[in-house]
Image (cartoon, rainbow, N blue to C red; front, top):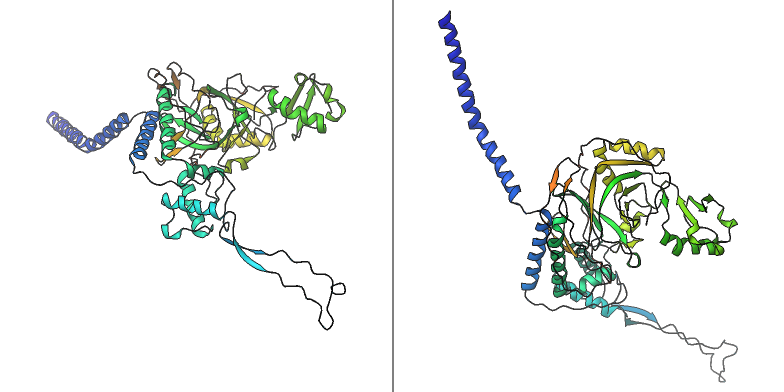
Length: 498
């Protein structure tokens, strides 16, 4: 009996030994592959540093490229399909007296009016279309034998190809934004690339691994999650007269179905003049308060009212200027990220049109991504939207937000995009903040190194309109994990710039 037990013990030990050896043999390649992936990821430079290197590489490529002729189109009218070439015109009709009043000679019939004379003349836009075609040939978008001063199908297709390559709306028309992109010289492009690379290097230490990045010249917002771009969307930023400032802030909470309290600048410059002229604010579903009491606007002599006594609040809903979501920051300038009730602006190439706030093309995607950390699902967000009631949900971990002014960027395909200045006097880049450990929305913690010194950048003559990057299709929101916090509702929201 004892011998039989010893035999079973020896067999079990042998089987365990063989199984262990097989496991080591089989798991070896798997472990090696995992280690290789981990090493490759560790060797990869930080995201912003990688972007800066890509911009420098592209600048060197352009600088070292053979010099080529560059036809300048110049400021002027928009040109589109069928413009230019030869156009038919009708000669002015000669006035002929009525038959019974026309002088006649004896024996001659009355003079009949001459038929209209139609002839062809060169269109006033022909020269401009010809320059567009020549420039497209120089850039390789149009074959040389297809030059024409008539905006035909070939020219239209070439314009669309150029616009797609530049990240512009491919509408096939040469408007001001497309014209400036066509006229941009290699030297201007190199200067913009190097200015952006210098700004990236100066700010990379102050950009946590998890950040909402607002790039003003690109008019875009990117969510970076643990060092990788999660998604990028188009944005509307401040107009030149009401610039969006460069801030280092954080999103502390998200408001669903927000109200909008008109900020002092908009009230005094836009809404009070409307009240004085028409007796109405021009805002749908708005309530006007005078000295804290709701009033009927037509019953007040607004010429005798100081703007400091007025407060205008727009109710939640589809007409609300903030859309259905507001992402609350901590700055005292009334600058927030939010949705919009005017989505058609996102189809434009030039989107510097707000009063300073940043409007998001897909505010719901941003809300679903951030609020998942508060255990709020997309269906839960939808249910809250359906109630029409205002609710603010505090994020377990505040999400850093960085407003930057980078004249170039790298899209998700690795293509470098150039963004000329949207402001004649670009805002100055703030000094990088001290490094900090910031919890990521997925629970990871990012630690940055020491702040890099700000590198002086030579000033480039600003262009009046931008050529923004294309916005990749938004990816599915990441699943965020963290504990939820009870909502904190504000009875009277702070004034928010649009």
